[in-house]
Length: 508
Image (cartoon, rainbow, N blue to C red; front, top):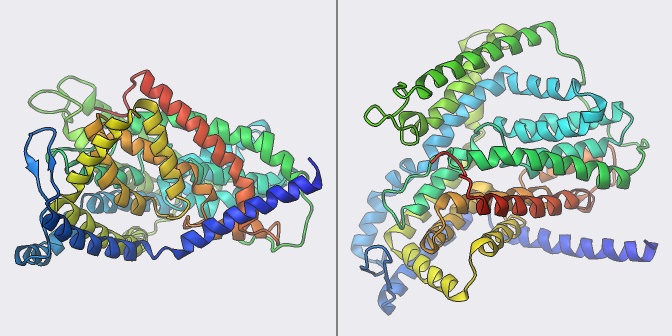
């Protein structure tokens, strides 16, 4: 490739990044965006009611008409239900409960120590694959992958005589590009399923979406995500970066590639014992036909206390394993340390609670006015008339989600905005809400690593600048773009194959 051609491509990339950056910066804060959309729903409801817009419910045959909120009764509903809209919002309680359990495991040091063990103990030939896999698995522990694994991966790669940015890119690809893939359920599962359930109830008021509804697909996705992340690192990113030479950047401080201490090893043994004990109890309650965690009347597992209590199980798993590690390793000196760790996690959710308050009002208004249902019916009719269906329709939705992700970073904010429109619309075409959620998760995860709006994007640039002082948005996106394209192509193909084989996305 000539220098002129390379310069032209860099120039085109820079122009594209400038458009993305300006577009994202032009958007208001996600919470403000929901305020604007909520007001728009109120105005649109009155306009739709006055113009006589209506639709025929495909299930009941009843005529669905919009309900204006610019009326006395509408005002009363807004005032009297504002609190319950917030407190009854499905994702709120599930996320808070799950996060409290994960917080204990994270505050104890269990998650960080496990990541260090995985990466440090990896043979040199498996170094990249272990780092990518560790990044994928780190999503169980909220931001631990971003603040611990990514800078640690750079140190490990440099110690192995390789370019530190290649290690950082591999870790970032696993942590952020593989955000939805995991062998374990994490806080993102109940968060998204709660939003999906709220949207599905626009069509079916009794619809339930289990937090584990995508588990089979996402657990299986761990394999291709890890493989593609490793392949891109070894075949594209590492050769492009070449040999590392010290450019005088700020050297990392506070991160050490030190072996595990004796107390840490004891803590891991205790955590493993606690995990096995908890797993034995769960198997005892689910495997026998009359297990105590099955439905007491029918013996069914899919509709049982076990499945409906997934969030509680996530909490108990994080709490039990975290306590076992913390007490044995000495990181928890008293019960106050445990409560402090839980409180720190909840305090970090302040901006999320603000976002949820306004998102809850938006979803409730959308439901009250019948605009969501009418839009879903009209949109479903348009999709049927277009003849677009099957894999092309779902892949198209994946690509739409991936593009929107470039301009709006919060996964929960995007899904709270998209779910009330697309979940009911695709339900009416014949796609269950769980499948629409999977398509969204693929698109959202694949472009996280090239989205300047992603909340940790600036932090990753700062990590890059430690080794390459001149690194900026263009440097990071140019490094991560091959991962993003490879993830989109591979994950979409994996999704289509999964559908054609008619495999279940999750339990039930």
